[in-house]
Image 1 (spheres, rainbow, N blue to C red):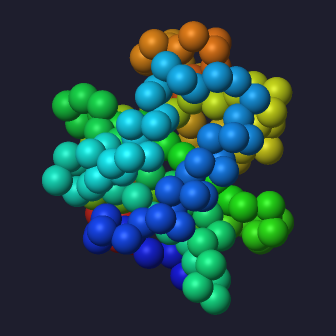
Image 2: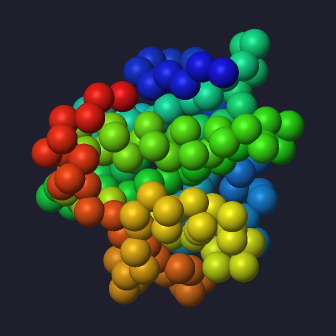
Length: 164
């Protein structure tokens, strides 16, 4: 399994398909996030030029999973689209992707990372986030689905200069 940062957004049809697959698995409506607009231009939210990043996990040329970071404020970011396809689950790939994006977010100068997740449907992911140091926090954005919001202090990672 190889995890790489996407730097060229010119041919991302397969990645769009994986993110759309992820969106279909969510047990709540994400229309408030304008998913069609996001899929139309992933670079608008996740490119280095706008303070973001996106990583893809691949095995034998197939995308196994992905994760992204989106800048949402001054030294503040959000983890987005952490997803591992069913055929690739059970190998701690989600943990590897999450660790990779947390380190990248710190390298990008962020001091705090947020994420939202579904309390019931994402119990395994929530346990992983808590083990990573994420703590429950107040809603940090328009959240009509009453999702669980979590935050992580990135300053320790940033101060230790951890490389991905």
